Length: 333
Image 1 (cartoon, rainbow, N blue to C red):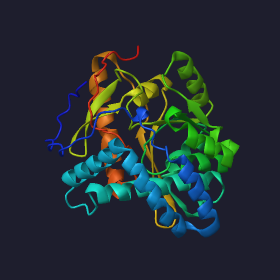
Image 2: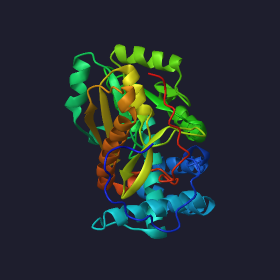
Image 3: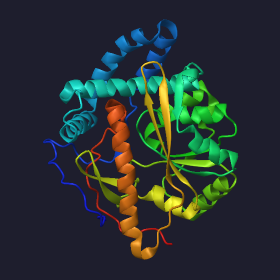
Image 4: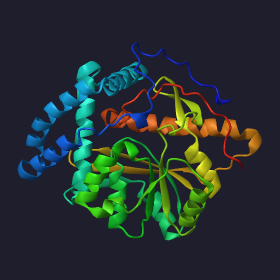
């Protein structure tokens, strides 16, 4: 589905684009055993010894996962081409630093659920955007990303009982890592909801949660696990990329406010950012494709903005720009 909006001139793709293999087929945490060992290294000796031992694990992982490695190189090349003034590494050196940031993120997840992350150093921007809704007893839909660390919001939700979150996930590709989180803290799985396909029954359950002032969290930067995913095409990093329409279709069904949530690791802690996106989303049949394209483009613009703040913390190790076979038969109104 192409949008009716005019799109900026697209720059050519960097050469040697990786395969269009779907993200769910790539086991991005296949080095869980190594991470488990490194977690205990951190517990005993601190972060710098952890980092020294992390590097061999990363080299092994990069050597064993050429598609993920090529995807990282491709992403960094696109980023440099779209934003030439941005000072950042490219090529294999850049990919290594990208994977290193991913390793640090996995450690942070374990520290969060192990009760060892410095929560006093998590700075929240746009807090009033959410607290005002909570004070009014209003729930909503939060669209998150694979930038930074979503676990931060889940832990904050558990630290503040008035903030109730249900995170929609497709965890089949990360069962080993989620099992390890559960071992650190059984509560790590309490607010996860496994959703491979959105059914009417699922929508009813989520609508009830929102009606009771809860927040449903869904990722907006990975296409659905489907042979013919329903996507909208939007400008992103100087090229056209497919974005899922599911968050916006779900928002229209729930008839609730929609927020964006971003996070990133900082030198001494982390940052969470909440933004209002739409008060309501309505998708009349005649304007459906156009509106979905506009929503995807607006989301992509905000994602790119936040990626530029922490470019090595966007963890999608597959060919994000590969255009799937499009399915324009959307869910019924």
